[in-house]
Length: 67
Image (cartoon, rainbow, N blue to C red; front, side, top):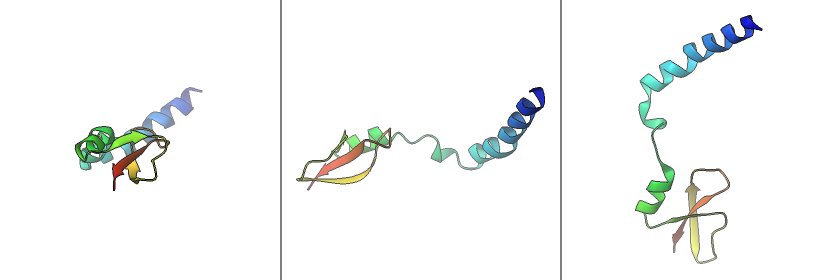
C-alpha cells in the first residue's frame, strides 16, 4: 500500500506541478464571475430568449445571456 502512495505522489509531482507552473492562468479562472461580467446568469436551463455560451462552476449549470 505504501508503494501505491509513493507512485501516486510521484505521478502528481511529475505531471501536475510542472503544468501549474507553466500555465498558471488555467487554474485561476472563476467562470461564475466572468459570466456575471458579461451580464449573464448561471442557470441549469436557459430560457428561449437566452443564449447558452459556457459552463459555470459545475458542468450542469450554463451561463445564459439575453439575446
